[in-house]
Image (cartoon, rainbow over all chains, first blue to last red):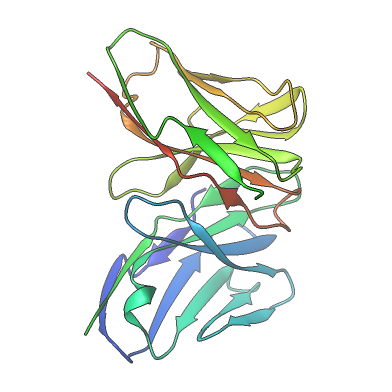
Length: 110
Length: 113
């Protein structure tokens, strides 16, 4: 039931854009996005709820396509500080278990 | 400052010994979680608790046990029955269900030899 993320890894030059996808085989109730630096704890980025909501956070935004059971994270004009592993997290219904995705390693180089 | 503390940061144990990992939060959150992370892997849920004196198994609960006697505390015991206990363990808390973000502690890296 773990959501699948794609791509598994991506390397960008500073200023380039990236899209990370999170797909589920089951209907999603909510989608969380987190970023984790090596050896550190994950840090919350945003939550999206059912209803196709799109949210933004500086140059990082995300969408939630209920029909496709998918969420996408958009990173624009990437900065070196964006490097890390990005995880989506989902719950399939209220009160159910929370699942993190497989992770996407993003490296931004000068 | 409010937050989640996990101790110790690094823990070494001999095979066959039980070990308890501490997790304390002063955020007044109802829900608490324990995750395991292996190198290059995602986070897998071990146990979670949405209220004091109640907890549920996650996908990989075998070989682990928890208690939730106080709202602030959610200790995890790694028992000798856990076949591959060496991993990075993360504790998290949340005000409620999945409508709310999870706040993570700094993690404990457990090495069992």
